[in-house]
Image (tube, rainbow, N blue to C red):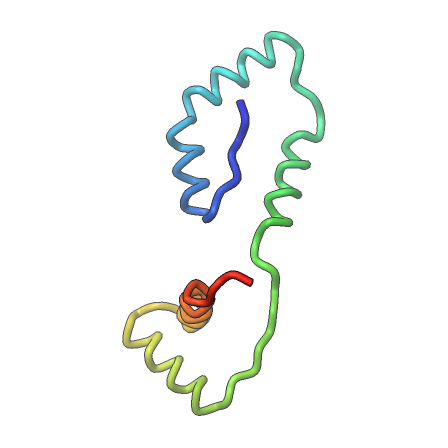
Length: 97
């Protein structure tokens, strides 16, 4: 079974859930055939971690930061989530280089 590349963590979670029975069957078949090896889970975890968000830091003008905090609070979402959403939406509007 080939695990596809995912555009989001939600999409990946949905795929794993939808394919859980097939994955279980594949695992049991591999175990019966002696094809399970060491390090596979750790390698996959390392690959998944490498795909995760890169840490970055930006400095905002205090007035902008205050407005962002207020809007995030009004929307009932964490401040950083709101900032990430703004950046993501702005980048989606930009044409690809």
